[in-house]
Length: 190
Length: 190
Image (cartoon, each protein chain N blue to C red):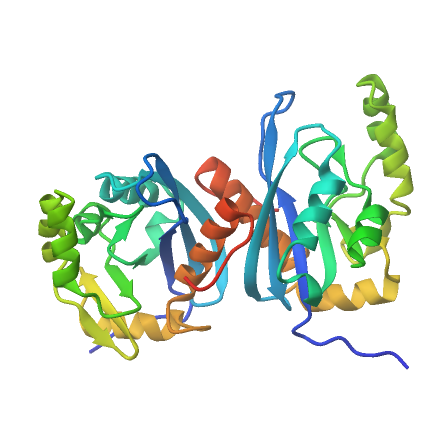
């Protein structure tokens, strides 16, 4: 028997702020805790190194030390990396938080092109993480990668949280916050 | 004949981040642009000097340069000052933006006590601004100060934007964002 999810399911959406490419330094990362697709309960933040290797660790820390942790049922990520090429190991995030992870991708990624770029930049170790993340699956008009939950479960959660656009509301809002704080005014879409 | 306000009325709610008292420096200020009481359309930010004199100017600049400016019908402030004693001249904000201003106050302020503190701190010039802000009016379980709109109009807008708590949703969310960005996790109530 399938247990139906509540409309008030607690989830977190994570996105990074705009930053200058090829610049060293850190980028602001925002996590928004939502109850369902419309009520924001809290805001978390951390920083990761631009093109660095600490995004997995920083996400795990931010989530695990949050007072909302016990209620969280899904982590949404806006793409598989933060701060440029700081690629996230989504299976590690799932393992260390024991919360399912859904990567949201707006456009079908050109994996071969990304691999060529990473090879040129001498960042072959990132390719392994990209491959480890697993299959890119189309759901409606977006794509996802999953860790720790079934496609059916992911579809069910997405129906609850995509209230205002194609993407989960916690990710849309995390994007508005991160860009508004760094640029002075939020721009465009998540 | 009274023109009814739309449920989708665009407003901005402004709050500052936590900061250490008696420390010099700047404090983050967040503005959230809402359509009615539940949909956040954008995030603005600026910084003001702790216990400084630039809050009026910084709020006017942040609002006037925003792409949302033409639609904004009300500015909500969480108290009459930002960054400690950086008191806002709400009539100046109203004049320079041509948008009505509503100060939200959770507990009836002890004006005499504040005046005594300001006198002790040698900040008598702030007392003039506090007095200029005008009468503190009770509406339901909160208090307000108004610039550029009638009490009736303020009550009408408050009915639309206080969807989740006693205070306008844009202020509740501005508080969550400002404290989440600065402290790593949002705390308590706006």
